[in-house]
Image (cartoon, rainbow, N blue to C red):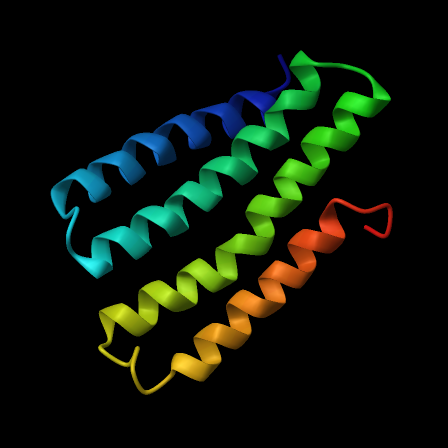
Amino acid sequence: MSSLSAVSLFIAVASLVMSIFVFIKGKNKPTNITMALFIFAVVIWTAAQAMPEFFPGYESALFWGRVSTAGVILIPAFFLNFVLVLTDHLRKSKGLLITAYAVSAVFLLLDITPLM
């Protein structure tokens, strides 16, 4: 196993544990939910980075690359959502958040096409 894969898997597992912990500590708190989603996007990204080593081949690498990209695409929107909830600016910046999620949705749709 390469050092990149080992570090990616370590980060993925540590982030998954942290995401679950944050969610369990505040299942009904918007701050905890948005932070858990943000961390889970990091889990998707880092776990998918390590997978091509375990599943070699062009098709597999392409699939895991797209999964990794999906995680990366979600990180900014989830982080913005977390910051707006944390700073109590969610109602004031609803349009910005909707725009961020819309842009993420467009990129996620493009991620499953040959365009990306």
